[in-house]
Length: 315
Image (cartoon, rainbow, N blue to C red):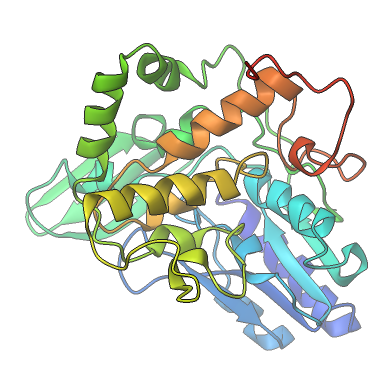
C-alpha cells in the first residue's frame, strides 16, 4: 500500500490546482507511531504532508456530514461504503465529492503490536507484507496479516465501492472468510451466560464516548446520551446506564454499519464494541440480504416498507 502515496499526492495536487475541490481530506503522519491523523489540505503545496500506510484506520467519512464545500476524500473500502450511506441519508451530496479510491489490504492493530513488547515502541517501518518494530534495545519484524485489526481480518469489501479516481489496481477480495464466527458463539449462549458476557465486556467502559465520536454514523446534532429533556439514560458509569448506551447506539447503527472498526480503534479501554454492531449486521444480511453502503440505488431495509418483510419474530 506504500506505493499509493505518490498517486494520492498527484491526484490531490491536481484537484486543488484545477479548483475542482476546495480541500482534500487524507492522512498525515501522527505524533506517535501507528497513529496517523486526519488531515485537511487546502493548497497544492501542502499536499506533501499526505501519507498512506497500514496506520490509516480512521474512517474519514466521519468528517463529511453537513459540509458545504467541494471535497476530495481519500477512501478505502469501508470509508467508501460510509460515504454511500452519507449520500443516501442526505448528509452530503454526491456532486460535492471527488472520491479518491484506495484498494486496501487491511490496517494494523496497534494494541496487538504493543502487547508484544514491554518497552516503548519508537518507530514502525512498513514494507509490502511486513512491519518492523523498533525501540530501545530491540527490533522485530512481523507479518502484517498477523496483526491486522479484527474487522480487517474478516473484511470482504476491501476495494472502494464508489470512486472517481483510483490510486492503484483493485486488490483481490478475501474469500471463504467466516465473518460471524464470534457472533454465533455468543448467540449459542444461554440468557444468563449472555448477560455475564456483556457485563464483563462492558465492565471497563468509562463512558468517554470515543466510540460514538469516531463513528461516521453518529452525526445526530444532540446524542440521546446528552439529552436532558427527557433524559433517556443516566450520565454515570452505572452498569445499567452503560449497557443502555451501548445497546441503543448499536441499534441506531443497525442496517448502516460497515464494520469499519473505528469505534473499537478509538476505545481507550480496548473494549470489543463491535460485538454489538456485528450482531445487527449479521441479522440484516440474513433477514434482508442487506450490506450497508454497497449501492446508491437502494434504500436501507430499516427505512423502507415492504409488504413482504419477514415477520417471524412477531408472536
